Image 1: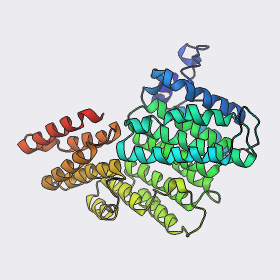
Image 2 (image 1 turned 180 degrees about the horizontal axis):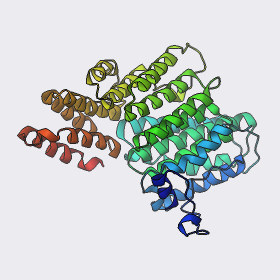
Image 3 (image 1 turned 60 degrees about the vertical axis):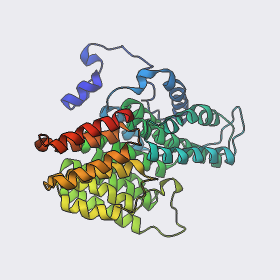
Image 4 (image 1 turned 90 degrees about the vertical axis):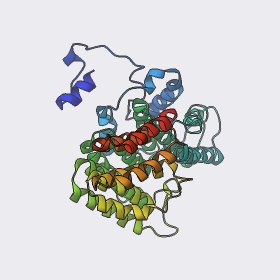
Amino acid sequence: MAAALAERVGRRVSEADIGMDGVHDPVAAMGLDFPRDPTTAVRGAVTYWRNVQRRHFLTTGGFAVSAYATPVTRWLAVPSTAPTAHRGTRHVGQSDVEELWAAAEDARLQDSRFGGGHWKSSSVSQCLTHQAAPLLNGTYTEAVGRELFSATAELSRVVGWSAFDVGQHHAAQRYFIQALAMARAGGDVQAGSYILATMALQTCLGGYPDQAVDMAQGASERGKGVAAPRVLAFAKLAEARAHGRLGDAAAASSALRQSETLLETIQPGGNDPDWLAYFTHERISADATEIYRDLRNPRAAFVWNQQADAMPAGRYTRAVGIRYAVLGTAHLQQRDLDQGLAMGHQAVKVLGRVRSSRACGYISDFVGALGEWKAEPRVADFIHHARSELAATT
C-alpha cells in the first residue's frame, strides 16, 4: 500500500505514514531485498527460488516501479563485489557451470519460440531451485564461483522475462532483482548491465518510460570500459525504446544510432558474450519498427521493417508475430486498412502458436487502432477471429 501511494504522489511513503508502522510480512517481501553483503544476497535468492512455487500469490499482481528503487541504486553505487572461494556441501566444477549456461540458453530459445507460458519455458524455474541453489552453497574456487554466479544470474533473468511475458509482473521483478544481486555478488558488471537493461525494458513496457530511460542510461554508463559492445548496444536500444514511448523522436533516434554503432565495432574473436548472440542488427531493426510506430512515423517504421525481415519466424516466433502487429498499426496510421488487416491476420496466425499475454497485448493494441472501422464487416470478422484464435494462448 505504501509503495502504491508513493508512486501516485511522487515521493517516498513509509508504513508509518499510513498508520501501519511495524506491520511487516516477510513472505510478501521475499525476493525484493537487495542485501549489500554477497553471502546474505545468496541466502535471500535461494530462499525466494525455493518458496516461489509454493506461494502462488507471489506470482500475481501488477508492476510496481518503486520495487526497483533500492536494487538499482545499490547496484549503480557498487556494481560488483570481489568473488571469493566457498566451502560447502558438494564440489562444484566447470561442468556444473556449463550445465547452467546450457539450461539458460535452452530457456531463451523456448521462450522466444513458444512464449513464457509454455511448459518448456515455465519449467526452467525448477532449475534454479534444484540445480543452481545447491551449487551456490557448494565448494568452489574463486574462478568457478565467478562463472557460477554469472550463469545463475542469467538463468534468473530468463525466468523473470518469461514471467513478465505472461503477466506475472511481481514474480518477474523478484527474479530480475535476484539476477542483479547474483551478478553483483559474482563481480560481473557486464551481466549486471545487461540485467539492468532488461529491467529497463520491463519498466518501459510496464508504463514507466521516464524511469526506464534512467535505468537504461545507468546500465550503459556503468558498463562503459567493462561490458562488451553488444551489451552496451542492448542498453542503448532499451533507452531508445523508452524515448519512443515518451514521444521524444530526437532522443530515440540518437540512442538507436548509438546502438547500431556499438554493434558495428564488434570484432571477430573479441570479448563478445555468447548469451547475447541473439542481439543482432535484425533485432535492432525489429525494435526500431516499434519505436517509430510509437512515434507515429509509419514511413520510418516500414524502412526499419525491411531490415528486420531476415529474422526467422521458426526461431523468433513471438518477436516476428509482434512485429506484424506493430506493422499493422503503422499501416492504420497511414489509413491503409487493407494492408493493416493483412498484417493483423499475419500476426494472429504466428502468435496463435505462442503462449504470451504480452504478445496478445499487441493484438489488443491493433484492435484498438481499428476503432473507427469497427462498423465494417471485415473488421468485425477480424476481431472475432483474433479473439477466438488467441483465447487459448493467454
